[in-house]
Structures are given as C-alpha cells and as structure tokens.
Image 1 (cartoon, rainbow, N blue to C red):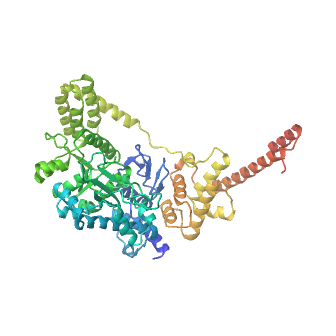
Image 2 (cartoon, rainbow, N blue to C red):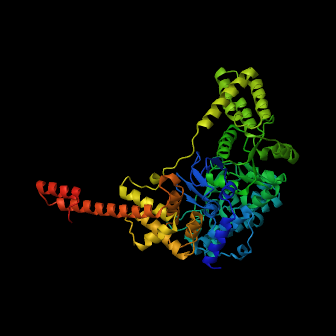
Length: 608
C-alpha cells in the first residue's frame, strides 16, 4: 500500500476519532478551560504541562515540546510506527475501516542487533540445558527444588544455570560463529587484556530477563552457595537492548493474562513473582529491586487494567510502596494496595507461601484496600501517636487524602477512624475538614484558564521582524487565500524556523490543491507520514505552537490586513538591511560623517 493511501486512511481515522479519548486511554486527562491537561508522559513531569485541544485535535507539552495529533501521540507513547499507531487509534475509538487490514509494514532489521538477540537467546538455551543435563547442574536443580520450584515452574520461567567454568559457554558461542565482540555486547562478560572473555555469571542460577516481545535481553544470576562475601544477585549491566529501569520482570508472560482477568500484581523480586505463579496467579510482574520509573508506569498503563501493589512488608518495602502510590496517583493509574495491616511476621509473598500455603497467600493478596486506608495504616504504624506533634502530622496527612474523596459516606468513615486512632474529638475533626474544604473550593474558583505565551515558546525574540514573521505563518496556517498571496509575491522569510514552516505549509497545500483550509490535525499527519524532513518532531512542535495560539492574538484573517502585514514586513526587512549597511558604512567614517549618515538613515535619505 502506497504512502498516499496510508495518508488518506489516517486522515479518515482522525476525522472519526477524538484525541481526548485516545490520550485518555493511556494517561489521566482533566478538563482545563476550553482545553484538556495531563501530566506529560514524555519527560519527568509532576504538574500537568501537556495541553490537548479538542477543537483542533492536537496536543502539546509546553515543557519538553513534544506535540502532535492522536496518531503521533500513540506513536510516541506505544513506541510504534505510523501505520501501527493508525490502527491502534482506530481500535481505541471503535472506528472500523476494511482498508486498515491491508496495512502491512515490515520493519527494517538491523543485522547487528538481530545477531545480539540471537546470541542472547542461545546463551539462555545453554543455561537451561546446563541446568537439566550437566552434572554440576544437579546441585542448582536441587537448590531450586528446595526453594519449592518444581520442573514445571522452572521451565515456565526459563530458569537455567551457568557452569562454573565460565569458558564453556564462550566456546559454545564461538563455535556458533559469534564474535567475541558480540558476546561482550550481551553483557555477560568483558574482553580482557588477552582479548578473551569469560562468563561473569559462572556458578549461579540464571533468571533470563525478557522484553515485552519475549526476546531475551539480559540475565539476573543468583548465587546458590553460602558465601556472603559474594553478591546475592548479579544483573546484566545496561546494554544497547537492556536497561533495568525500563523492564518489568515477567511482563511478556503476564500481559495477556492481565487483560483477561483485568488486573496485574506488582511485586518486588523474581521469587515473589514466581510465588504468585505457584499459587495460581499468572498476572504478576516484578520491579527487580529498582525504583519505579516513568517507563515502568507507561508499560503498566498500556495494559489498561487495575494494578495491585504487593511489595515487601518490611520498612524498605513499605517506604517504596509509599513512593509508588504517589507516582501512580500523579499519573492517574487505576490501582489498589494489598492490605498492610497484618499480624504475621513474614515479609514477602515467597515467605508467606512457604509458611502458610497457597490458599492463605491468595486470601492475603485479595485483601485489597485503597490509597487512603493504606496511608492510614502506614502512618498509624510509623508515627508515635503518643506524641502530640505526630498525631497532628497524621491528621494533616489524612485530611489531604480525605479532601480527595467524592463520597460523603467515605469522608464520614475516615474522619471517624481518624478520631478513633488519634483520640481527637470527631466534631473537631469535622470542623477542620469543613474549613479545609472551603479553602479548597475558593482556590478552585480563583483558578484562571491556562494561558500560553506562544511567541516565548517558539523562541521568537522581541525583534519586530521576527514578530511579523510569526504573524505571517499564523495567517498561512489559517487561510488558503493567504497561501496563494504569499506564493504570488515570492515572499522570503529570513528567519530559518519560520521559513521552514512556511515552505512546509506551501508543500502541503501544493499536494492537496483542492483543500479549502489548512487543518492542523491533517497537516501534522502529513508531516508524520513523510520521510522528507530531518527534524519532524521540532517542526511539529513549532506548528502546534502556532495552532495553539489564542484567536485574539491577531485579528481574524482579512485580505487587506494580510497584504498590509506583508508590506510592513518588506519595509521592516528593508529597514534592517539599511541599518546593517549603515553600521558597515560607519566603520570607516569620521565622527561628523557618522552623524550625517545616521541623520540620513533616520530621515529615510540613507543610500547603501
């Protein structure tokens, strides 16, 4: 299928879809005046800086500059190509078009990266074979069996073993024609001064790490001896295909199951994820001991299911849970937390399963609570409620949460529980809540509509010439007649940024000669599907800046007004050239001659 056909299909998809609905399928969106706002998923954002125009069907982050329409949003968020994004947008909005089934796109494969993936897969297979078929693998298998992992579980997670002689796997790989350099790129070892390499994971049980497509990208190696001088786990260092901060353990296995059952558990480590699987829960991913990142959040968001947080019950795990629920709330994720108000001493799912069995673990995992209840439990345990300052601190923390509740019954329930825990009078707490609620409502009422200073965002200087060029491209984006006039006059814009935008608008117009007006949404689609521009993202960002421009910033398009603007532009351009010529001329003049030349410039009699 040709690019022109793809472009036509994508335009039809966009005309039948709502950008707010599309973006809402991935992130939390709130109405803000005429537009909508969201926390930007493309940089570390906490305050909503991504604005969405329902009228123009475009979005723009006014911090990192990421911008576009519904298709480009899905392209960037899901990390897919233009064609895949078009299909996904149609799916989100329930738009059916038989032509979409004809879209086929074959990604160009990078031979070096493909070789790396193949090498990693062969390493994983060697580890698995070593576990079940080598003599020394027997002790590793015994270790896993002692940890209650039977052969079915071991095979499901592709667990393996790295032989103590770290050269065996290297010999195996070189016999398969992998270069030492490729082996080093997998991250299992480094080339030494003698240009040889050995496996850093030697003598350890191996957990392969897979990306969301099921490709092995790295390994985590667990020691099986009692030598505490050795690290318990050795993880693959960052490589061109592996970054621990972007990966969730078991996501590939869990994602389809998660969509079936409409939830996914988030746990700390491999053994916790495996414990849930042993208990019959397949929809589980693990953080692998790292802090939650924006990449993790985006991967979880894409599943579109309830996230059930079950981190360790020790102080570190609960502190991490506190951080995670804040991030989930900021990003509008749907989540619950496994109840942290327990009487047993075991700290993680693996320990609970081994001590009490599957039925008990499942009952524990199904005891889910919301953010407010978890926070009440957490601070009631971590604060000293015999101390007056700590009691007041608990009240302040919980009042912030209670103010977010929508149900009066929930408000009453939490105030009652807070009164019971702190021994503060219930009416006193009710009065405090009412006072805070009035302050909150007053703040909301005083909140003004989101304002955008487009010239600043575009990097337009206070120079009059730059300002009038901005005005010209604004009219070009809003009127076909303006485009025709601009073309007929062969107008040249000296500002490189505005010149590129103007030229791109004209190219788009020339390829769509029957259009009556420039639609920003269609224009962005045209740019996104093109391979002709070096920096598409920057160009789209500049165009969305202009499209987001307030309508009252310039007078509505009028032919006389536009012609006058072009005349003013040519005058300013000539004036700037004269000024530069004056500066050059004055370099070799005496003071009297400089004064006369300046006087001529001011009166319009200066000749270059």
